Length: 337
Image 1 (cartoon, rainbow, N blue to C red):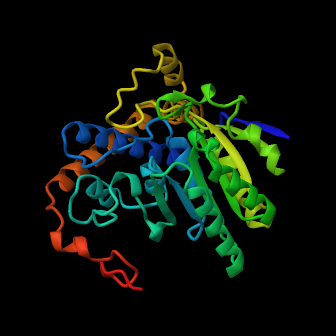
Image 2 (image 1 turned 180 degrees about the horizontal axis):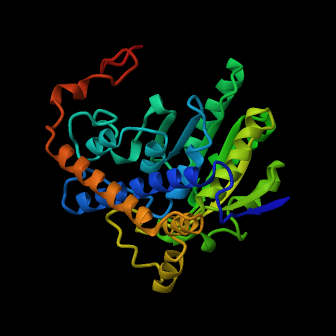
């Protein structure tokens, strides 16, 4: 069975929920845009891969997870950590090499992690975290709890062996895991359509593992919330895994160092009309929210991010001595046989 889900109005929780989701997406957009600016100023250390344009997937997914549920993602994981409640200041301190980074300066942009908030890490090796998601889900089964694991990955991972092995194992063992493919149309610099024999990289492979082919408009946060919410509820009730393809667009280059010039201008413009923030603003307006109130969200979140960045940039660098702490489970840097 193939399901194509979309929505254009607040479904559950009404306008208040729709506004809350919009506010979170707007904050994350401002945060990511600020990271891009800081990178170009030489203030962000190491590579940075932004998810500008993909905020609806992170926010919609996080909105249906419980406090003790787990999520796991790729190196484009800033939005996912923030959506789960991770400290924006701690994330930005990590990116700029300041004291108090979310990984104490040892992870950088590609490994943002906040287990405290249920986000079990961003992984730099394409597809490598899908088996880890199965491990988290299997541990939940062994412990007899009702936690669900949500695993986000890009369309570029669907040709990786780990993708097929993980989805197959999850289906065979009926693990409580929801796999979410963020199909942003490009695997690094190559259009995904050039390297797969099917139209939909994840959904068209679902049948091979006995799963339904589910596609959702990844730029519609209400649709994402609805579809992923149903999958989470089913997994929590013992219904097994789900494989969901969220169609979206990366509105920037592969990384901050990539201008993305290989993307056709008309394609960029077309997807720009489907910007998830623009879409949700339209939903709010149609629900009776005043234009001034909608515009006020962006102004308020922009000011908050500017203040955050100024505070972070004024913070000191980490104490070099901390480079030798917390490298192993006993808190030291010494390997124990």
